[in-house]
Image 1 (spheres, rainbow, N blue to C red):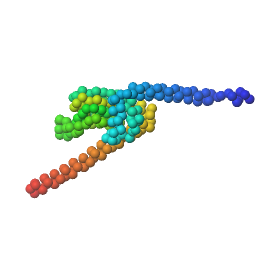
Image 2: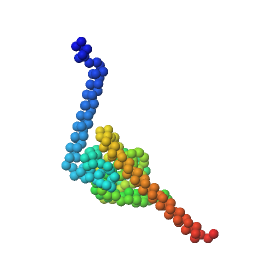
Image 3: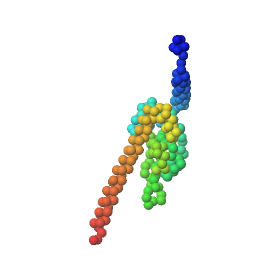
Image 4: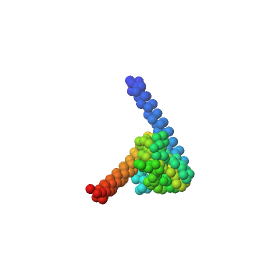
Length: 213
């Protein structure tokens, strides 16, 4: 009777072993997180990065505590003036995005019928660059050049995967924010294309009016 009451089957031991493994994995993750947070503790650049992430211009739906966790996965980087850190058409280096902390960046594109790039934007602190590449891995759509010395924070695709695995809710919010930024950019491009089509049509009508019949 006592043997039946107090003995445990193999399934019970297996469940206990699995739980022990899970507890061990969680402990490791917690220790890694503590180590990352210790590294950025007291860092002015890390705090600046977190504050820029939650600024309205970035469209990030993060609280400051969540932004600090995201920043703990980033790496600081300094680009000298004239450094091209994203190259239009590059297929091999698409696994990172850049948060500009300080300095100025020129964004350029090669447009149809031109051989030299056209400047499409000049961006400063708080700008996020390269987020489309980190999502889809497609060739870079623009060239980004540091026109002054630039302090930045780099966030890679592997960082994103780690964030999603270790902090699913924050990772989901971060991905949603990136998606909203991309959607906003696509809407802006669509509006510009509509305006361009309207201007082209108006010009064609004026040419038709001036041309002799």
